[in-house]
Image (tube, rainbow, N blue to C red; front, side, top):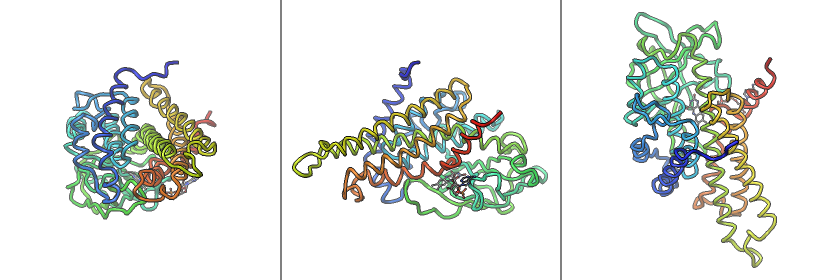
Length: 380
Ligand SMILES: Cc1cc2nc3c(=O)[nH]c(=O)nc-3n(C[C@H](O)[C@H](O)[C@H](O)COP(=O)(O)OP(=O)(O)OC[C@H]3O[C@@H](n4cnc5c(N)ncnc54)[C@H](O)[C@@H]3O)c2cc1C
Protein backbone atom coordinates (compact mmCIF):
# COMPACT_ATOMS: atom_id res chain seq x y z
CA UNK A 1 0.00 0.00 0.00
CA UNK A 2 1.48 3.33 -1.09
CA UNK A 3 0.50 6.41 0.92
CA UNK A 4 2.52 8.90 -1.11
CA UNK A 5 1.01 11.28 -3.62
CA UNK A 6 2.34 11.15 -7.18
CA UNK A 7 4.74 13.93 -8.22
CA UNK A 8 1.87 15.54 -10.15
CA UNK A 9 -0.45 15.44 -7.12
CA UNK A 10 2.33 16.89 -4.94
CA UNK A 11 2.77 19.68 -7.45
CA UNK A 12 -0.94 20.46 -7.24
CA UNK A 13 -0.69 20.55 -3.45
CA UNK A 14 2.32 22.84 -3.55
CA UNK A 15 0.84 25.28 -6.04
CA UNK A 16 -2.54 25.32 -4.24
CA UNK A 17 -0.81 26.02 -0.91
CA UNK A 18 1.23 28.83 -2.44
CA UNK A 19 -1.88 30.28 -4.05
CA UNK A 20 -3.83 30.05 -0.79
CA UNK A 21 -1.10 31.76 1.22
CA UNK A 22 -0.61 34.52 -1.33
CA UNK A 23 -4.16 35.14 -2.51
CA UNK A 24 -6.60 33.79 0.09
CA UNK A 25 -5.04 34.20 3.51
CA UNK A 26 -4.78 38.03 3.20
CA UNK A 27 -8.44 38.49 2.18
CA UNK A 28 -10.29 35.72 4.02
CA UNK A 29 -11.11 37.81 7.11
CA UNK A 30 -12.29 40.73 4.98
CA UNK A 31 -14.57 38.49 2.88
CA UNK A 32 -16.03 37.06 6.06
CA UNK A 33 -16.71 40.46 7.57
CA UNK A 34 -18.03 42.09 4.41
CA UNK A 35 -19.98 39.06 3.17
CA UNK A 36 -18.25 39.49 -0.17
CA UNK A 37 -17.78 36.90 -2.93
CA UNK A 38 -14.09 36.92 -4.04
CA UNK A 39 -14.61 37.31 -7.79
CA UNK A 40 -11.08 38.57 -8.39
CA UNK A 41 -9.70 35.47 -6.68
CA UNK A 42 -12.01 33.12 -8.54
CA UNK A 43 -10.67 34.69 -11.72
CA UNK A 44 -7.12 33.92 -10.64
CA UNK A 45 -8.14 30.34 -9.82
CA UNK A 46 -9.57 30.11 -13.33
CA UNK A 47 -6.28 31.33 -14.82
CA UNK A 48 -4.52 28.42 -13.10
CA UNK A 49 -7.04 26.05 -14.65
CA UNK A 50 -8.51 25.19 -11.24
CA UNK A 51 -12.12 25.83 -12.24
CA UNK A 52 -11.89 23.00 -14.74
CA UNK A 53 -9.79 20.59 -12.73
CA UNK A 54 -11.56 17.37 -13.64
CA UNK A 55 -12.85 18.52 -17.03
CA UNK A 56 -11.07 16.70 -19.89
CA UNK A 57 -8.63 18.84 -21.86
CA UNK A 58 -10.72 18.53 -25.05
CA UNK A 59 -13.45 20.56 -23.27
CA UNK A 60 -11.11 23.24 -21.94
CA UNK A 61 -10.20 21.69 -18.57
CA UNK A 62 -6.93 20.36 -17.21
CA UNK A 63 -8.09 16.76 -16.87
CA UNK A 64 -6.67 16.16 -13.40
CA UNK A 65 -7.57 13.10 -11.34
CA UNK A 66 -9.95 13.18 -8.36
CA UNK A 67 -7.18 12.98 -5.77
CA UNK A 68 -5.44 16.05 -7.22
CA UNK A 69 -8.73 17.93 -7.08
CA UNK A 70 -9.26 16.82 -3.47
CA UNK A 71 -5.77 17.91 -2.43
CA UNK A 72 -6.35 21.35 -3.97
CA UNK A 73 -9.73 21.58 -2.24
CA UNK A 74 -8.10 20.80 1.11
CA UNK A 75 -5.38 23.41 0.67
CA UNK A 76 -7.77 26.17 -0.42
CA UNK A 77 -10.07 25.34 2.52
CA UNK A 78 -7.21 25.75 5.01
CA UNK A 79 -7.14 29.42 4.10
CA UNK A 80 -10.65 30.32 2.94
CA UNK A 81 -13.64 27.99 3.04
CA UNK A 82 -15.77 30.51 1.14
CA UNK A 83 -13.47 30.43 -1.87
CA UNK A 84 -13.22 26.65 -1.72
CA UNK A 85 -17.01 26.38 -1.64
CA UNK A 86 -17.38 28.26 -4.95
CA UNK A 87 -14.47 26.21 -6.32
CA UNK A 88 -16.20 22.94 -5.40
CA UNK A 89 -19.63 23.96 -6.68
CA UNK A 90 -18.08 24.72 -10.05
CA UNK A 91 -16.06 21.51 -10.19
CA UNK A 92 -18.13 18.91 -8.33
CA UNK A 93 -21.68 20.08 -8.84
CA UNK A 94 -21.69 21.66 -12.28
CA UNK A 95 -18.75 20.47 -14.37
CA UNK A 96 -18.82 16.85 -13.20
CA UNK A 97 -22.48 16.09 -14.06
CA UNK A 98 -22.01 17.82 -17.42
CA UNK A 99 -18.94 15.66 -18.12
CA UNK A 100 -20.68 12.47 -16.94
CA UNK A 101 -24.20 12.97 -18.28
CA UNK A 102 -23.98 15.70 -20.95
CA UNK A 103 -24.32 14.91 -24.64
CA UNK A 104 -21.63 16.10 -27.01
CA UNK A 105 -23.44 19.33 -27.91
CA UNK A 106 -24.03 20.22 -24.24
CA UNK A 107 -20.41 19.53 -23.34
CA UNK A 108 -19.13 21.67 -26.21
CA UNK A 109 -21.56 24.47 -25.40
CA UNK A 110 -21.02 24.75 -21.64
CA UNK A 111 -17.83 23.10 -20.41
CA UNK A 112 -15.19 25.34 -22.02
CA UNK A 113 -16.70 28.47 -20.43
CA UNK A 114 -17.20 26.80 -17.05
CA UNK A 115 -13.73 25.26 -17.01
CA UNK A 116 -12.11 28.63 -17.68
CA UNK A 117 -14.29 30.68 -15.33
CA UNK A 118 -15.96 32.68 -18.10
CA UNK A 119 -19.22 31.44 -16.66
CA UNK A 120 -20.20 30.10 -13.26
CA UNK A 121 -22.45 27.21 -12.39
CA UNK A 122 -24.87 26.18 -9.64
CA UNK A 123 -26.67 23.00 -8.63
CA UNK A 124 -30.32 23.35 -7.62
CA UNK A 125 -31.83 20.34 -5.89
CA UNK A 126 -33.04 21.57 -2.46
CA UNK A 127 -36.48 23.16 -2.10
CA UNK A 128 -38.19 24.93 0.80
CA UNK A 129 -39.94 21.72 1.81
CA UNK A 130 -37.45 19.10 0.64
CA UNK A 131 -33.78 18.87 1.54
CA UNK A 132 -32.71 15.46 2.84
CA UNK A 133 -35.78 13.97 1.19
CA UNK A 134 -34.79 15.36 -2.20
CA UNK A 135 -37.33 13.24 -4.07
CA UNK A 136 -40.07 15.10 -2.18
CA UNK A 137 -39.51 18.10 -4.46
CA UNK A 138 -42.50 20.01 -5.85
CA UNK A 139 -40.98 21.84 -8.82
CA UNK A 140 -42.48 20.49 -12.04
CA UNK A 141 -41.38 20.46 -15.67
CA UNK A 142 -44.08 19.85 -18.27
CA UNK A 143 -43.17 19.11 -21.88
CA UNK A 144 -44.74 21.51 -24.37
CA UNK A 145 -43.53 21.56 -27.98
CA UNK A 146 -39.82 22.27 -28.07
CA UNK A 147 -39.75 23.32 -24.42
CA UNK A 148 -40.21 22.15 -20.86
CA UNK A 149 -42.21 24.57 -18.71
CA UNK A 150 -40.81 24.77 -15.19
CA UNK A 151 -42.80 25.92 -12.15
CA UNK A 152 -41.67 25.92 -8.54
CA UNK A 153 -38.79 27.12 -6.39
CA UNK A 154 -35.42 26.05 -5.00
CA UNK A 155 -33.78 27.03 -1.71
CA UNK A 156 -30.21 27.49 -0.40
CA UNK A 157 -28.53 27.41 -3.82
CA UNK A 158 -24.81 28.14 -3.57
CA UNK A 159 -23.29 30.60 -6.07
CA UNK A 160 -26.80 31.50 -7.26
CA UNK A 161 -26.20 35.25 -6.90
CA UNK A 162 -23.68 35.22 -9.73
CA UNK A 163 -24.04 31.86 -11.53
CA UNK A 164 -24.84 31.83 -15.25
CA UNK A 165 -25.77 28.15 -15.58
CA UNK A 166 -28.02 26.24 -13.18
CA UNK A 167 -28.55 22.50 -13.10
CA UNK A 168 -32.15 22.32 -11.95
CA UNK A 169 -34.02 19.19 -10.86
CA UNK A 170 -37.77 19.00 -11.46
CA UNK A 171 -40.57 16.43 -11.58
CA UNK A 172 -41.41 15.30 -15.09
CA UNK A 173 -43.57 12.43 -13.83
CA UNK A 174 -44.88 13.47 -10.40
CA UNK A 175 -46.58 10.13 -9.75
CA UNK A 176 -43.32 8.20 -10.18
CA UNK A 177 -41.43 9.66 -7.19
CA UNK A 178 -37.66 9.63 -7.64
CA UNK A 179 -38.14 7.86 -11.01
CA UNK A 180 -39.99 10.90 -12.26
CA UNK A 181 -37.25 13.51 -11.73
CA UNK A 182 -35.31 15.10 -14.61
CA UNK A 183 -32.36 17.47 -14.69
CA UNK A 184 -32.29 20.65 -16.80
CA UNK A 185 -29.61 23.12 -17.75
CA UNK A 186 -31.19 26.51 -17.11
CA UNK A 187 -29.40 29.66 -18.21
CA UNK A 188 -29.72 32.71 -16.01
CA UNK A 189 -31.49 34.87 -18.57
CA UNK A 190 -34.23 32.29 -19.29
CA UNK A 191 -37.67 33.99 -19.22
CA UNK A 192 -39.63 33.00 -16.10
CA UNK A 193 -36.52 32.34 -14.02
CA UNK A 194 -35.54 34.67 -11.16
CA UNK A 195 -32.99 34.56 -8.35
CA UNK A 196 -34.16 35.64 -4.89
CA UNK A 197 -32.44 37.37 -1.99
CA UNK A 198 -29.13 36.38 -0.41
CA UNK A 199 -29.37 34.33 2.78
CA UNK A 200 -27.62 35.73 5.88
CA UNK A 201 -25.59 32.77 7.16
CA UNK A 202 -23.61 31.66 10.23
CA UNK A 203 -20.45 31.07 8.20
CA UNK A 204 -18.91 30.85 4.72
CA UNK A 205 -19.85 34.52 4.42
CA UNK A 206 -17.94 34.90 1.15
CA UNK A 207 -20.41 32.62 -0.64
CA UNK A 208 -23.71 33.46 -2.25
CA UNK A 209 -26.77 31.41 -1.21
CA UNK A 210 -30.16 32.26 -2.72
CA UNK A 211 -33.63 31.02 -3.49
CA UNK A 212 -34.65 30.42 -7.13
CA UNK A 213 -38.10 30.90 -8.63
CA UNK A 214 -39.56 29.38 -11.78
CA UNK A 215 -42.79 30.77 -13.16
CA UNK A 216 -43.71 29.24 -16.49
CA UNK A 217 -40.00 29.17 -17.20
CA UNK A 218 -39.41 27.93 -20.75
CA UNK A 219 -36.39 25.67 -20.99
CA UNK A 220 -35.47 24.32 -24.44
CA UNK A 221 -35.84 20.54 -24.80
CA UNK A 222 -32.20 20.19 -25.76
CA UNK A 223 -31.30 21.38 -22.23
CA UNK A 224 -32.45 18.13 -20.65
CA UNK A 225 -29.32 16.72 -18.98
CA UNK A 226 -29.21 12.93 -19.08
CA UNK A 227 -32.30 10.85 -19.74
CA UNK A 228 -35.87 11.92 -19.10
CA UNK A 229 -37.03 10.76 -15.63
CA UNK A 230 -33.48 9.71 -14.71
CA UNK A 231 -32.47 13.01 -13.11
CA UNK A 232 -32.47 11.63 -9.59
CA UNK A 233 -29.61 9.38 -10.62
CA UNK A 234 -27.76 12.45 -11.97
CA UNK A 235 -28.22 14.16 -8.58
CA UNK A 236 -27.20 11.15 -6.48
CA UNK A 237 -24.12 10.25 -8.55
CA UNK A 238 -23.06 13.91 -8.53
CA UNK A 239 -23.41 14.07 -4.75
CA UNK A 240 -21.60 10.76 -4.21
CA UNK A 241 -18.43 12.28 -5.60
CA UNK A 242 -19.17 15.87 -4.46
CA UNK A 243 -19.14 14.63 -0.87
CA UNK A 244 -15.47 13.73 -1.14
CA UNK A 245 -14.74 17.40 -1.84
CA UNK A 246 -16.77 18.47 1.20
CA UNK A 247 -14.81 15.95 3.27
CA UNK A 248 -11.64 17.60 1.93
CA UNK A 249 -13.04 21.01 2.85
CA UNK A 250 -13.64 19.75 6.40
CA UNK A 251 -10.10 18.34 6.57
CA UNK A 252 -8.68 21.67 5.40
CA UNK A 253 -10.66 23.65 7.98
CA UNK A 254 -9.70 21.19 10.73
CA UNK A 255 -6.02 21.35 9.75
CA UNK A 256 -6.14 25.14 9.86
CA UNK A 257 -7.74 25.04 13.32
CA UNK A 258 -5.03 22.65 14.53
CA UNK A 259 -2.31 24.91 13.08
CA UNK A 260 -3.77 27.92 14.87
CA UNK A 261 -4.05 26.03 18.15
CA UNK A 262 -0.45 24.77 18.02
CA UNK A 263 0.83 28.26 17.23
CA UNK A 264 -1.19 29.94 19.96
CA UNK A 265 -0.29 27.34 22.59
CA UNK A 266 3.39 28.14 22.03
CA UNK A 267 2.82 31.88 22.50
CA UNK A 268 0.33 32.15 25.36
CA UNK A 269 1.50 31.99 28.94
CA UNK A 270 -0.53 31.17 32.05
CA UNK A 271 0.70 30.51 35.57
CA UNK A 272 4.19 31.49 34.41
CA UNK A 273 4.38 28.78 31.72
CA UNK A 274 3.50 28.40 28.07
CA UNK A 275 0.10 26.74 27.85
CA UNK A 276 1.67 24.15 25.47
CA UNK A 277 3.50 22.82 28.53
CA UNK A 278 0.25 21.80 30.20
CA UNK A 279 -0.59 18.17 29.58
CA UNK A 280 -4.29 19.00 29.26
CA UNK A 281 -3.48 21.20 26.24
CA UNK A 282 -1.05 18.63 24.81
CA UNK A 283 -3.70 15.92 25.02
CA UNK A 284 -6.22 18.14 23.23
CA UNK A 285 -3.66 18.82 20.48
CA UNK A 286 -2.82 15.12 20.19
CA UNK A 287 -6.49 14.16 19.85
CA UNK A 288 -6.98 16.86 17.22
CA UNK A 289 -3.97 15.70 15.23
CA UNK A 290 -5.05 12.03 15.32
CA UNK A 291 -8.54 12.92 14.09
CA UNK A 292 -7.34 15.21 11.29
CA UNK A 293 -4.97 12.49 10.04
CA UNK A 294 -7.73 9.86 10.12
CA UNK A 295 -10.15 12.16 8.27
CA UNK A 296 -7.53 12.94 5.64
CA UNK A 297 -6.81 9.26 5.01
CA UNK A 298 -10.51 8.43 4.68
CA UNK A 299 -10.95 11.32 2.24
CA UNK A 300 -7.95 10.39 0.10
CA UNK A 301 -9.06 6.76 0.09
CA UNK A 302 -12.50 7.70 -1.27
CA UNK A 303 -10.89 9.86 -3.99
CA UNK A 304 -8.38 7.12 -4.82
CA UNK A 305 -11.18 4.59 -5.20
CA UNK A 306 -13.03 6.93 -7.56
CA UNK A 307 -9.84 7.36 -9.60
CA UNK A 308 -9.44 3.58 -9.76
CA UNK A 309 -13.06 3.11 -10.83
CA UNK A 310 -13.88 1.15 -7.66
CA UNK A 311 -17.18 1.44 -5.83
CA UNK A 312 -16.67 4.47 -3.56
CA UNK A 313 -20.23 5.32 -2.44
CA UNK A 314 -19.82 4.10 1.13
CA UNK A 315 -16.27 5.50 1.32
CA UNK A 316 -17.41 8.96 0.28
CA UNK A 317 -20.15 8.98 2.94
CA UNK A 318 -17.79 7.68 5.63
CA UNK A 319 -15.21 10.33 4.72
CA UNK A 320 -17.80 13.11 4.68
CA UNK A 321 -19.41 12.01 7.95
CA UNK A 322 -16.14 11.61 9.82
CA UNK A 323 -14.34 14.66 8.42
CA UNK A 324 -17.31 16.98 8.92
CA UNK A 325 -17.90 15.84 12.50
CA UNK A 326 -14.23 16.10 13.50
CA UNK A 327 -13.89 19.51 11.79
CA UNK A 328 -16.47 20.94 14.20
CA UNK A 329 -14.84 19.15 17.13
CA UNK A 330 -11.30 20.23 16.22
CA UNK A 331 -12.36 23.82 15.58
CA UNK A 332 -14.16 23.81 18.95
CA UNK A 333 -11.06 22.54 20.76
CA UNK A 334 -8.87 25.05 18.91
CA UNK A 335 -11.18 27.83 20.07
CA UNK A 336 -10.98 26.48 23.65
CA UNK A 337 -7.18 26.55 23.51
CA UNK A 338 -7.42 30.23 22.55
CA UNK A 339 -9.50 30.96 25.65
CA UNK A 340 -11.41 34.26 25.42
CA UNK A 341 -9.42 35.33 22.38
CA UNK A 342 -10.90 32.45 20.40
CA UNK A 343 -14.31 34.04 20.81
CA UNK A 344 -13.15 37.32 19.30
CA UNK A 345 -13.42 38.05 15.59
CA UNK A 346 -9.77 39.16 15.35
CA UNK A 347 -8.68 35.53 15.59
CA UNK A 348 -8.88 33.17 12.62
CA UNK A 349 -10.13 30.34 14.80
CA UNK A 350 -13.45 32.12 15.34
CA UNK A 351 -14.14 32.02 11.58
CA UNK A 352 -12.96 28.41 11.31
CA UNK A 353 -15.38 27.42 14.08
CA UNK A 354 -18.31 28.93 12.13
CA UNK A 355 -17.17 27.75 8.70
CA UNK A 356 -16.65 24.15 9.90
CA UNK A 357 -20.32 23.87 10.82
CA UNK A 358 -21.71 23.84 7.27
CA UNK A 359 -19.79 20.71 6.31
CA UNK A 360 -22.16 18.68 8.52
CA UNK A 361 -25.15 20.00 6.59
CA UNK A 362 -24.67 20.52 2.87
CA UNK A 363 -24.35 17.76 0.26
CA UNK A 364 -26.20 15.53 2.74
CA UNK A 365 -26.34 16.00 6.52
CA UNK A 366 -24.36 13.72 8.82
CA UNK A 367 -27.56 11.80 9.52
CA UNK A 368 -28.07 11.20 5.80
CA UNK A 369 -24.46 9.97 5.51
CA UNK A 370 -25.24 7.45 8.24
CA UNK A 371 -28.33 6.32 6.31
CA UNK A 372 -26.22 5.78 3.19
CA UNK A 373 -23.51 3.90 5.10
CA UNK A 374 -26.11 1.67 6.77
CA UNK A 375 -27.89 1.06 3.45
CA UNK A 376 -24.63 -0.02 1.79
CA UNK A 377 -23.70 -2.12 4.81
CA UNK A 378 -27.01 -3.95 4.95
CA UNK A 379 -27.65 -4.45 1.24
CA UNK A 380 -27.88 -7.93 -0.32
C1 LIG B 1 -25.11 27.35 3.08
C2 LIG B 1 -25.87 26.27 2.36
C3 LIG B 1 -25.57 25.99 1.04
C4 LIG B 1 -26.30 25.02 0.35
N1 LIG B 1 -26.05 24.82 -0.98
C5 LIG B 1 -26.88 24.01 -1.70
C6 LIG B 1 -26.78 23.93 -3.13
O1 LIG B 1 -25.90 24.54 -3.75
N2 LIG B 1 -27.68 23.16 -3.79
C7 LIG B 1 -28.67 22.47 -3.16
O2 LIG B 1 -29.45 21.82 -3.84
N3 LIG B 1 -28.79 22.52 -1.81
C8 LIG B 1 -27.93 23.29 -1.07
N4 LIG B 1 -28.06 23.37 0.29
C9 LIG B 1 -29.11 22.60 0.95
C10 LIG B 1 -28.59 21.47 1.84
O3 LIG B 1 -28.08 20.43 1.05
C11 LIG B 1 -29.74 21.04 2.75
O4 LIG B 1 -29.95 22.09 3.69
C12 LIG B 1 -29.49 19.73 3.44
O5 LIG B 1 -29.46 18.67 2.52
C13 LIG B 1 -30.53 19.45 4.52
O6 LIG B 1 -31.82 19.64 4.05
P1 LIG B 1 -32.85 20.54 4.90
O7 LIG B 1 -32.16 21.81 5.22
O8 LIG B 1 -34.12 20.59 4.19
O9 LIG B 1 -33.02 19.75 6.26
P2 LIG B 1 -34.08 18.56 6.51
O10 LIG B 1 -33.99 17.57 5.41
O11 LIG B 1 -35.39 19.15 6.83
O12 LIG B 1 -33.47 17.91 7.83
C14 LIG B 1 -33.66 18.45 9.13
C15 LIG B 1 -32.98 17.52 10.11
O13 LIG B 1 -33.60 16.21 10.06
C16 LIG B 1 -32.61 15.24 9.77
N5 LIG B 1 -33.22 14.20 8.94
C17 LIG B 1 -33.92 14.34 7.81
N6 LIG B 1 -34.29 13.15 7.32
C18 LIG B 1 -33.81 12.22 8.19
C19 LIG B 1 -33.88 10.80 8.26
N7 LIG B 1 -34.49 10.08 7.31
N8 LIG B 1 -33.27 10.18 9.29
C20 LIG B 1 -32.63 10.88 10.25
N9 LIG B 1 -32.54 12.24 10.25
C21 LIG B 1 -33.12 12.88 9.23
C22 LIG B 1 -31.50 15.99 9.05
O14 LIG B 1 -30.26 15.30 9.13
C23 LIG B 1 -31.51 17.29 9.81
O15 LIG B 1 -30.79 17.15 11.00
C24 LIG B 1 -27.31 24.29 1.03
C25 LIG B 1 -27.58 24.56 2.36
C26 LIG B 1 -26.89 25.53 3.03
C27 LIG B 1 -27.25 25.84 4.46
